[in-house]
Length: 474
Image (cartoon, rainbow, N blue to C red; front, side, top):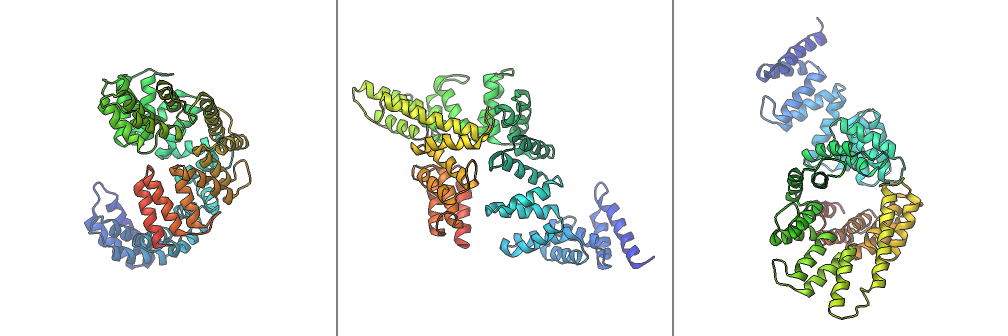
């Protein structure tokens, strides 16, 4: 028996011990080490993994790195990949590790291709799409998800392809793909509407803890449209989403408590849940807080505070709040030129333009059409609609319905950001950090991130971490 054959024989003995139930690490690890010392690359790789993750021994990164290097020297590509991951985990800057990932990706290592894909996506670099396609061809679920989102949202009009890729990713356990499929079946995005299929995917996403899916599932069960109603289960799911501070769930619960539908009337709980959603500028929640203050529901009436809530809600697209303001003015016999019937009709027109643009942009209930979406967004954006301005900026940035123009993207993000739109504030921060369409300025970028946090961005901790990273790498 040659030395190589002997090393492989020892490795096979170790494998049998490792795959036994339960694994016999105490006997297997010395055999792995013996085979690894004899130059067996797979034995060195598995021994490094045991050292890295503390399987049958205490975790030891130094030893893990030693054996992974041995495996890498023996031609083990996944050992090379794990070494790159260890370097990142040890705080080595990604730019220093990137050449190792790129080398592996070019050799066809799928996980390395996905890591490179994520890196370029974070940099808003088109090379992310190339590596996503490479990895998706090998059925990597994260690459399938990335491509599906690209085909759905980022300028490539191919909803059927997005649907197919979401299906493939979902079949491999990607929960967010189930959530996207639920939305496609609910709204007819690239597929025929199918509430049975929507419910199937919603349940998977909700069971996995996606708050937005829990809220949507709860509403479907409460409404009982196209499926049997189950109010008790519906409220259960909405409560779960609200505990995770999902804005739509909190606003929905606030309304249920306020009017006593599906839940006992409770003004204090209504105000509590409305306030949670209002922190993130949810227009329905702001309008409900205005109602609570106008009519003194569980608290003393305060028309000035009610007006303030209504005005804030109008700013974020609530036509109901505008009608409330008209009612306040008519009762006080004060002619308010800001909120008269003519203005209301104008605002309704602006909101309809935004909603039409949104439906066409994402193919909700209508065929996806970027050029028409761009036209509708433009109408609403020119009349000051902040969400339309943000989405118009994204269309300019991604080249959807028009040639990509980062300067125009920055212009519209700036207009929406100054009106308090947190998505625009975040997008503008990214442009300033990368110097895309605006001069590169990390200080300004961090200021916009902080503004987004102060304005109620739904992921403040992530933005704080981003501020820290940007200041370390200006």
